Every structure is written in C-alpha cells, then in structure tokens.
Length: 479
Image (cartoon, rainbow, N blue to C red; front, top):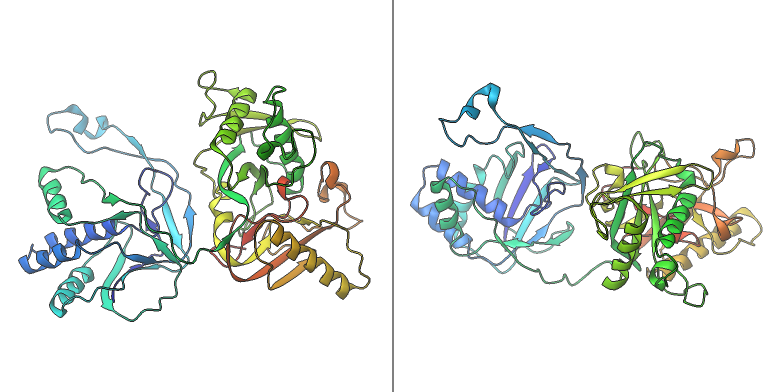
C-alpha cells in the first residue's frame, strides 16, 4: 500500500475550493499536491529520474483520502495589487497600482495530517525513494503560508481517520501540462473533475436536507436565542404570505391540501446563533430554511418565488433566487427583523456546515420540546422517561436510537440558555414558544450514538421551528 501524508505545520490550510472564494479546500485535492511536487522538482534541478517518477505517479488512480473534520475560518476581503501587465504601463508605479479584492479561505483541521492512500499500489523501491526525496523538500501546498511536511511511505491497511473522496484527479500528461503552462507564464488548469464512487459505509442521516438557505441579520437587531422559535414561526408566516392565496405544497406548509397536519417531512426553519464558541453570547445571527432531504426541484422553485414576492429589494421582477434577497419579518413581540439572504455565509455562526458533520456525540443547541409531558414520579424515573421520549424522537427523523441520552436543564453548548429559567428570574429569560408548542416541557440533552450519524439533527415537537437543534461536539465544534 502506498501512502502520502501531508502535515500542516501551522495547523491551518489556506486553499480555496474550486469555484468558490469562500469555502476552503479540505482535504486538499490530489492535483494540488502534485503541482507542489512538480514545483519542487523544478527547484531541485529538474533531474530526469525524478521526472520519470512523477510521470509514473500521475498515472495512479484517484486515492482514498483520510482526513479529520475541520472548522472553516471566515475569509475577510483583502485588497492586493494584481500582477504587472507590462513594464511600460503607468500602473507599475507604486502610487498608481490598482487593487483587486481577494479572499483567502482557510480550514483549521481537527487533526493537521491529510493522508492519501492507494491500497493496490506497490511502487518499486527506487521510485518510492525518489518520490520520498521530492516530498521531503516540499515547503508549502497551495498558498505560501500553508507550510507543510510531506512524506511517502508504505504501511498496512487500517487507517482510522475519517474517510472522504476526491473530486479531482491527476492523469497521464499532467506533468507536461504543468511544465508547459509555467513556460508560457499562465496559470495551469485544475485537474480533471470526476464523480467519486459512494463510500460503502455512509453515516445514517435524518429526513432534513443538507442544503440550507441562510438569511443573515441585516440591521443589527439579533434577537436572543430564546426567541428563535418565535422568529422561525414569523419567517414561516412571511413565506406563506408570499404564495398570495395560491395552494402551498405540503413539503413547505406542513399541511395537506385539506388543512390537516402533514405526516411527511416538510420545511424547517433553524436558528443560527452565536453559540458554541468561547465568547458565544447567544445572539441570533440569522435563520436558515431547511427543506426535506427528498424535496422536489419544483417545490424548491415555489419557495424561491414566494421569497421573491416578499422581498424588499430585487435585482429584477421575478428574480426568485437573487443572492441579495432582503426580507422583513414581523416579530410577535413587536418590531420587524430585516434579513438578507447569503448564499455563501460569511460569519462562522451562520455556516450550516457546523450542523452537518457526522459524529457520535451530539448536544442540543436549543432545548427539545418533548412530544408529551413526562408522567413518571421521582427524578430518576423522570430522567429515564425523558431519555426514552428523546430516543423515540431520533427514530422519528430517520436516525437510530442513541445508546445513551443524558437530559439536563443546561446545554453542553456554550452560549445557549438553560431550558428552564428560575421563577425568580425575569420573563425574558424564558424560551418563547409559538402556537401549539406553548406549555410543552423543555429539556436540553446530550446524545451518544453507537456509530456516527450525519446532521442535521433536530428533535422533538418543535423541530420544524428550530427547537431541539443539535451540534456535534466531537467533530471539530468548540463547546
């Protein structure tokens, strides 16, 4: 078995995902690593035997990548001078140089080593030695601030890191392509994109979809997280008004055409709060619309059209998926909350990826509204009954029953408010529950599954309004 390890010495990988200036490329694609190897070959003197080793390497099949989960670091815009287009142009003068906006997205991996493995490849000793010498002299991969230590080796099967698949590959002739682009002074194309085969073992996932439509605070109001369910209800009401009396699909309304509650998964609205960080203060930074995992493209299109109807600002009439769609939501306590759609959220608290990772241990960011009121007498019996109700909530959304459930008044996520406020505390310290959820028993909980499950995880009777929303606490989330 051939393996290549890339260790990020500063614990940060600066690299942008193809087609995006916001999302980092983690784990780095193999063509990025190969480009660094070719650059090192040139810096070492362009030895013919090393070129042959690289040309052998470019013919290998796509590797299986073993890499941990990561945090995506916010990439603020910076302004840098572009490359000089000609020595005679006045723009080369320092006072006249133009500035172009750039972003440098970064991934902070939980474990700073990404491993690329070819289980069926056994290179000759001489080839492995040449590749190892090249890898040893690689200084950085991608951005020059991504300092690395790379090394080839052979080892048996049994890598324990989280497995992911490549989306780009190298190919025979890639070396010559990179060399030709360098001589012409142009940027080389990326490697070939391809659809990787599905991994044999995929974590169980819930009925909730993984493509969220994020609306961020546009005016600095940022209600307290305790008002998240009421704010979610208000956003749903605004969306329903955008249909202007026309029939609303069951996947969006949560009701059948005759007005009965739906028994099928439907649209949920999740809070995106400033929680889970060291200085998390519980402010609601925005809301996310989450459609069912198997929603039709037609129903999703109807959602965009409804949003266009209620938008404050549009690029043009009927532009249903405008990236800067701004809407106004009437909060039940009075006042309005202005939200703007962010297709690629900038703030760390607004990134859906926090809630979509796979993990064995999850904790509630917002309390669970239990499906029924516990009837057991005594604290131990009551805890067992609550744990059973939460376990049933997991199966209701397509997840296995957890092996352990620990209910608690307090959340394991920093910044989230307790499920139950003391009677001595003022009214605003209590969670606001809309409509039929009023009077429901609330509890936080930590859940441990036998195997990793994939997010999003939202449990209980208030899951469609963001109650019972969970964060993984063993997959790179700070708690």
